[in-house]
Amino acid sequence: MMNSGQMGMNKNRAAEMHFLIKTGEDEVTESAFYATALTTGTVLGLGIGSRVEDVERILGPDFLDDPGRGTLRRDYGLVEFGFEHDHGWTCRVISIQVHRLACQGDDTVPAALREKYGSFAPFVRYESLAPALAAQGYTTHIDWEDPHAGFRVLQVDQTGTEIVVVADEEADRTGERPGYGDVWSISLSLSHEGQ
Image (cartoon, rainbow, N blue to C red; front, side, top):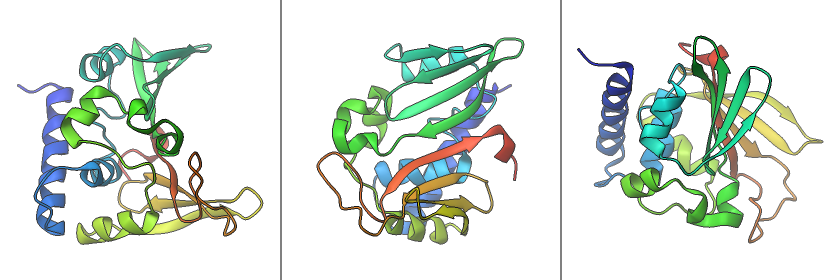
């Protein structure tokens, strides 16, 4: 009998293979990482409902904990997990802080992700993710946009996963900051699970 971690890993692998077939790529790259996260809501098979010990077993001990009252944010650099204490620490939120790649590069990527997907580019354009999603039959819509904040949030219709994109047309890429059209972050929360 498979545990939830093994089922998540199988779901992850199936999504990666589907991505490779649909896009014609011949190796698992950072593009497959983002597409898999957006379509499955998982990172290396870890998803909403994963236990804190499973996250540490898969991503390792190199993290920063930020505890709160009944909550725990575990920061692995590129990836953060938010836990609530409900009969043990259970994951309720996952976010991929893509913007950190611009200033910290691969140093912010957990070793387990680098080993599987290779190096990560400092910037990710939304336009580079959209065709990969469409090739797999996934669609997005604008969930909200705030011109004053300079961000647009797109939601993957089939999963509820959110993509935060820089929407300030005057925002230029710098060595440390994404520009217009670049992905700022990707997130999945319990409120979107199973949509």
